[in-house]
Image 1 (cartoon, rainbow, N blue to C red):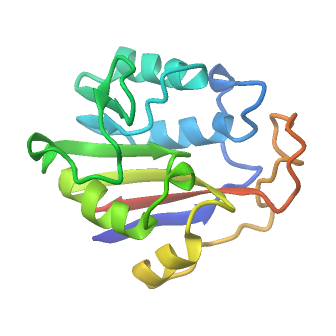
Image 2 (tube, helix red, strand yellow):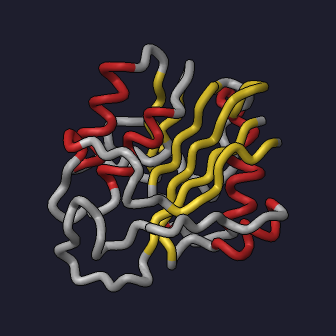
Length: 183
């Protein structure tokens, strides 16, 4: 496994306004980042079933030939709770696995979920593209597992300096980060 990227987002990162959402100050950054790392078959583990999740699902369906969408509840995609091992038929099947702002909402050991549930689904050379909110994501545990600390750009993205203004009243301690792992 190789760490390709591990950082907080910057205000200078690209945005895509087609993923604008009135309560999603970071999604205009996260989705274009994920799209820039797509290749081949895709497992979108953060389908989400409503709002901006549907917009991203529809984009993937229109632009990716082989895509599977999953969520922990029945919603028109596959049902899979990321805290459980992946299905046998998913092992070694995908070129890209996406987890967009999901793990911080999940109870369980995030480093173990990535290592034991996400990475085994990838073909050799495949990539896990993970974005996350901090606080929420178990960042220190993931840093220990990876053996490296997250990078922090000088102009780190916060709810206060996002090009999509925050309407939820979040303070500047909130960050959104990304991790790209290649197997």
